Each structure stands twice: as structure tokens, then as C-alpha cells.
Picture 1: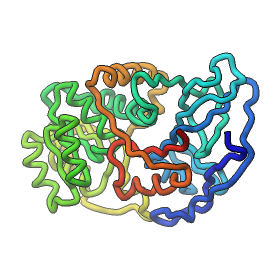
Picture 2: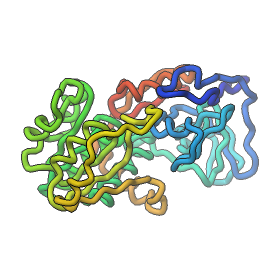
Picture 3: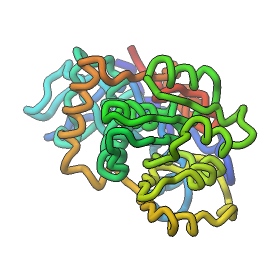
Picture 4: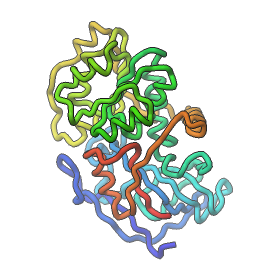
Amino acid sequence: MRETNREWVFAERPDGEPGMDSFALEERSVPEPNHGEVLVRVRYLSVDPYMRGRMRDTESYAEPWDVGESMSGAVVGEVIDSKSERYETGDIVTGEGAWADYVVLGADSVAPVDPTIADLPAYLGALGMPGRTAYFGLLEVGTPKPGETVAVSGAAGAVGSVVGQIAKLNGCRVVGFAGSDKKVNWLTDDLGFDAAINYKDTDDYRVALEDAAPDGVDVYFDNVGGPISDAVFTKLNLDARVAVCGQIAHYNDESVPTGPRKLPQLIATRAKVEGLLVGDFANRFEEASTQLATWVASGDLSHRETIVEGLDNAPDAFLGLFSGDNIGKQVVRVSE
């Protein structure tokens, strides 16, 4: 064990895109668990786009951080001290904890991890919150049917890559938007997407969609917003469903952008647009986790993680989400 515990705190609210000024690394004492708690040595921690919303001083679906509060998110780690009968020293668990070397977690708030199914980082991605978001967002909100066309923005990210694969397992044609040729090739060559569009090299998304989705779009899983979503709305079919999961194109905007008004297109198509929060399905998390693990174990669901080395680089890993550095899930390796 380290003699002290390094921990990132939220240092300053950003204006627009955050920078390193928003983070401060502090040295603290290693915490001690009380009855019903476990001390976990963090192996990997998750950085996610939704965390940008927690940096704002406004109420949202995720409670905002106070300045001086510990940065936090999903972690996977090893129990090194247990004050609970549920877990023993050496057990691997996942839960919500600080960006730190060590965290104390309630034994009733963590879940066991089975490293025989997948490596530990997968439990922050395809087998964690992003995988469950994809599972419920597509199947419960998007309700895809065999033969339909599913479009996914942010398709090479942690959520989008799982969405596309589940859609393929349900007999759909899948079109993804991603930000590089490397990502596009991963989607089509490795994950089985029928078509993928490099939005950074595309001048007209509507024209690109006409080639990639010649029969229109029945389900749109939106992780991005912005001009991509504007274009997809023009291709929605009758009774299409739109699942709004994220709007990363706007997370750093200081004012709400005004663009083409797309709502009239919903009248002709009778399309449904629904926002989704994975927490609304909390009572069914075990169902999703079991099915996702089955798909991973059988090889039907692939996953990929971009691993940033070292707790020191956790802020860089988070900021890299907004420049598209990651393929699949972005995680930080804190310890071996």
C-alpha cells in the first residue's frame, strides 16, 4: 500500500471547454472502512462525457460537483480491507468512487467482478454503465425490429459501439457515425456495422446518409446532437424512434445554439423522440448485466477500451473525450 492517498478534486468551474485548471491533485490519508464497508485499491477508473454536466452550477440529472469536492465515477478495484461479511480481501468489485488510489465503498453499493468473463476495464464499459445504457436505450426506447435500419452517432464510443452490435444481433441494418477512418474501419471490419461515416471528412451528412441508409432510418440512437442529428432527422421513416442518450457536441456550449427547426419533420413521419437515463432501469440492471456478459462470453459482443496510464493523467483522459481520442471506452489504469 501507498502511505498516502492521492485524490483528484474539482478545483474550478470551467467556462466552455474545461482545462487543467478545473482539477487539483491532493494528498490525503488512506481512508479506513467502517462496519459494512470495504477499502478498495482502485485498479481502473472511468471517465465519461456526462461528467461535464456535473461541472456546471445547475441542477441536472447528475448532481453538480461542489468546488473542492472529489472527482468521482465508476471504479474497479481490489478489496484490501473488509468490514463486511459480503466481501473478503482479494475480491474484485466495481462501484462508484473517487478518482483516487484508494476508496471506501459501502458493501451493499458494489458488485462483484468476474475476471474470467472479461478483463477488468470491460466492467467500466460494455459490462458496466455504458453497456447497460446501450441495452436499455436501444431495446426499450428504440425498440428495433428485424430488417429495420438503425443509425448511431458517436458509434465508436463506449455506448454507441455496443448499441450497434445489439442492433445487429436483432437483425437490423446498422449505420454509424465516427470521427476517423480508423474508427470507421473498426465499426465495419470488426463490429459488423453495415456502413459507417467519417463525419470529419464528410461535407454533407444528408448525402452520406442517402448512400449509407438508402431505405431511411427507423431508429436513431443519438449520442452527439448537432449537425449530425439535423441530417438524420431528414431521413427518419414513418413511425421512427429516436433515443436521445447524449449531446456531446453541445456539452461545452455556454449558450444553447439555435439551428434548423426539425420538429415539423416529426409530424409527417409520426416519429417519437425520447430521452433516456439508464438509472430509470435500475431495478433491471441484473437482467442487462447477465445478458451482456453472456454475449461477451460467447463472442457475440466485442468490446474495446482505450487505457490511459496513471492516476496523474486522469484529467487528460477526461478532456480527451471531447477531442475524440478514445476508441471504445476511455479508462484510466490506476494500479497494476
